[in-house]
Structure formats: C-alpha cells, structure tokens
Amino acid sequence: MRFKRVAALVLLGSIIGGTYVSMIPQAHAEGTDRIDVQVNGRPLSDAGIMVDGRTYLSVRDLQDSIQGFIYWDAANKKLYIDKPNVHMITFKDKNMFGKVQAGKTTFSVHVQVDDLLSKVDGIRLTIVDPNGKATEIEQSKLSTQEDNFWFRSKDFTYDFKAKGKYTINCYLKQQNGDYSLVSQKTLDAI
Image (cartoon, rainbow, N blue to C red):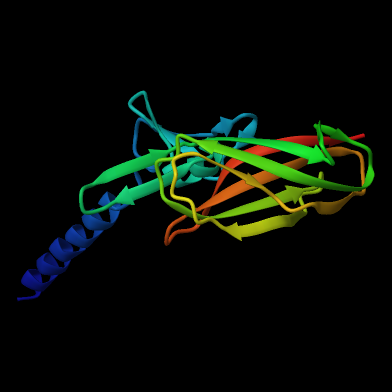
C-alpha cells in the first residue's frame, strides 16, 4: 500500500515538474539567445531573441520605432501595421526653421499626413528638452477621415532653456484607441 502511494506521488511530481519545465519561456531553451536590438541608435526596452537563426522581436516595442499603428485582430489572427507618411515643419512667423536661439520663442508646427489607412480622431504634439522633459504643444480632435490631411498647431511659446537637441513628437489617435507616435523632428537650440 505504501509503495503505491510513493509511486503515485512520484508520478504526480513528474507530471507537475514536466508541465512547469515546458512553460519556461523559449528564451531559455537550448539554441536560443537573447539579443539587444537598436533602432536608429536607440535600444528597444524589450530585447529580442534568436531561435535557430531567426530573430523575434516584440511588435509592441517596435511601434514607436516604426512610428506607426499596430493592431492585432485576434479573431482572424492577423497583425496590421499602418505606417503613414507624416512630415513636420516648424515656423516662426512665416519662416521655416530647424535651429533656434536659446531662450523664449513663439512658433507653430505644420503637420502633413498622407497614406493613412487607419481612422484617426485626434492629434497631439509635444516637445521634449535635452533632459527628457516633455511639454505638450497642443492636443486636438480631428474631424477628417481622409487618407491625407494638413494640420497647423496654434502659436506656442516655449523657453529653450539650454543649448542642445529638442524633439518635437507627433502622435495620432486611432478611433477608439490610444495615441501612437507617428513622427519626430529634431530642433537644435544654439
């Protein structure tokens, strides 16, 4: 009787142990290596893995790097990636600029979007200083459902407190979704 109990416990332990081992992520399996991934010189927060010579990356982690929309359709097991063309031009009065003197400056951002396949209902512009502090320039609702459109921000006064690189970020909001980074522009404060 005692032998049957010990045999049953050993069998149960083997089943549970085998189930646990099979749940260990593939990143720890033999022939699998974690890899660091950089896009345009910036590391992705979630490293990739290499399995049998193939590289696997987190699509969500790539979203900001590709500056587009990613949508997973679970019912049809399809991944959609929409990368619109988005260009930004900065204006001070009627003059375009890419470099600015340190100090307070009033400017606007012109955004041109085309090849947009997703339906969007919002736009947000931010500026990030050299230390990583983000300030909102403008957030607005969009009423257009065109695949291309123009948007001009209101005049915005900003204090370029230090010399260095400032980044203007443009985010579009998918209908009933979140904002996604779709373009960046660097301004040099001199």
